[in-house]
Length: 372
Ligand SMILES: [Zn+2]
Image (cartoon, rainbow, N blue to C red; front, side, top):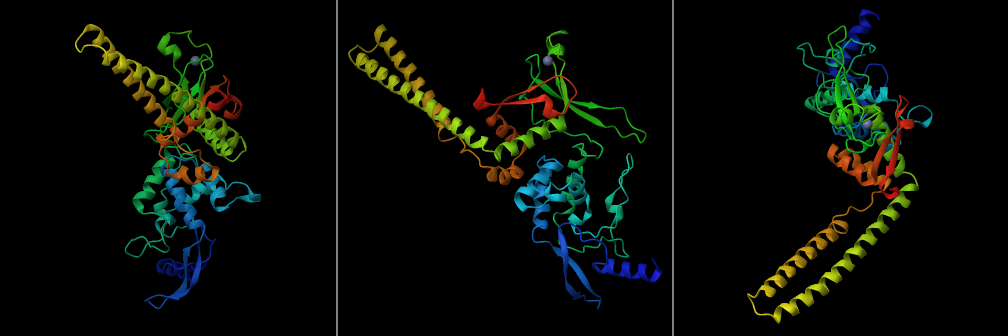
């Protein structure tokens, strides 16, 4: 590039104008404008679909989603696909999320990702002669949020080195070891690499031997957490888009209807008991031993009725309506980790883990509540 070309590019960069290069995901070239300094050019303006897709991605990642989940959401909600109509690659999602463009900054080409070499994208943005970042397009989020995204991506083992911090441990309480014991989430810091970066490995591990003595668990099963969780999340989204969902919901609904019918029958019986006991009590002298026994029994029946009513409310009023696939796709980004665990638990009774080293798809057997 000649010095004249370089100067023209720098000039355009400082004015926030586009100067060649590929259109970044999320924005598109706007009309030609002239700024207060008399410079003419075109600026990036929000792409009608992709800009919102980036906003959703920010929400998703900050609530614990992985890159693939973002790609699934982009496809389901916006019809954004990668090559040949498949999911957008995780690398592309990641590239969009680590880009300072999200903050409105003008990003230069980042050096290619190299293992063990950390690149600060903020070192690769256009700045004014005073060193202030050039804001050249409408941001997706503010700088503080952008930093939170970077931290979230680092902590998720998405090609970036793992950081410290708490994980969601989405499958705690659901995963069962072949020995019948539960698997617990364990963070295993690895030896520091040449740069002193310490990678943390997150696994679900059976603790039966540690808790109940060696030999309690002969399976000794464990599984790396991120792919196992991703597999279950992918399974959830697939399940919700399949016709198995309708069958499951119908079964769940009829199970609820049966339970409610049982409670109503119990309530009727309790009501009759109460009538009989009250009649009996009214014929007795207050203060006698028998009267005390009968009033004690009445209090007991009252308690039983109150419990039955609570149970009925939990099954009917408080029971969430079954979600559709569309509702799940729309709701998932807004759910925190606790809600996600609850949602999985409402559907999944437990997940059997087979021993071995295979892919989660081969080792995890998801058992539905409606199949239990
Ligand atoms: Zn075990």
